[in-house]
Each structure stands twice: as structure tokens, then as C-alpha cells.
Amino acid sequence: MVSAMLERKSPREFAALSQVIECQGKIEDFGRLVELIESELKRFGAEEIPQKWRQAPVNISIRFGWARGLPDVASLTGRVAASVTLVCQRCLEPFDLSLTTDLNLLLSAAGDDAIESNEFEVWEFDDDVVSPEDIVEEALIMALPLSPRHTSRDQCTGLSDSRWSDSGWSDSVRPGKGLPDDEVLRPFADLKSLLADTEDKD
Image (cartoon, rainbow, N blue to C red):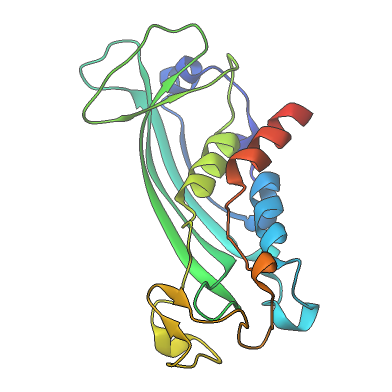
């Protein structure tokens, strides 16, 4: 990860510098994101998981500045695109999902006055300083679909029309895995608790 992504400053310091970062990282650069993905892939053998998923690229283009019409309020705009390995909830097989999220944020430090905006999303941070890496990772995590699926059902493997409908499986046996009901994959169902645990460790 380039050093600019790892710098820690207050949002206002980044804004005053008009910091622009355009770089390419990897999924493995983002520890909490890796932890979430690994929690979904742990039921699979190594031969079933896409190779080198941790090395998948993360393309980053972000700009810090001052929010229009809101003096002294730091903003961050840009786009982050990545290829993320998830588990399809139709066929319960790992697959690579192209994930793109546009950022249009107001950055509020701890103790700042409340901010409201129809144009920007307000992000509040507990610490006085942040790093671009933290912001990008949080944006990627929040962009993860709660129920990821292949783009087309035709891409799913092992589906039987008599056993799957848009409302779910008609019995307790999943194709290729034979998972009982109490082990059905529920992607990112524990997202909030995982994030809380990670923050507690920090």
C-alpha cells in the first residue's frame, strides 16, 4: 500500500492539503475486510476457493477538500473498485464479485458540531485523526452485499429448478455441500459484531 494511504491526519489537515490519492492496492491490505471474507470461505477446501483472492486489485481514486457551502468541513470524494471473493447464496459456491462504490463524504471528527447535508453522506470518526486506508476499507465493507449472488443464475453450479426458488431452498440439502439447516451460510450476518470485536482489539 502506498504511504499516502497510511498517513494519519485530522480530516481538516487532509482537506487543507487538497490531498489526491490515485493508486492500486490489494485486498490483503485491508485486515478487517480479509477477516470478513475468510469467515465466509472457511467452510471450503483450498481447491474450491479462487486462487490468490487476497491479491485481487483494489483501485482507489479519492480527493480530500472542503465541502461546498460548508466552510471548514472536510470532504472526501472519489471511487473505489475491487474484485471481492464472496459466497453465492443461490449455489453456495465461492465467486468473484466486482464491487464499485462512489464516495461523497463529509468527514466529522470527534467533538465536531453536528452536520447535515443532502449532497453528502456524513461520516463521523471516534478519533481525531484518520487514514485514507481506514476510510477506503470502511467504504468497501459497507458496500458488501448482504446476500451476494452470481449476476446470472446460469452462472450458478448444481442448481435444481425443483429445489430453488427466489424465496430460497425447498429442503435442507444444499447442492454440492449437503449443509444442514443450522450451517447455512449467512454472508456478513455478523458484520456488526465482527467490526465491534475488531474495534475493541484496537
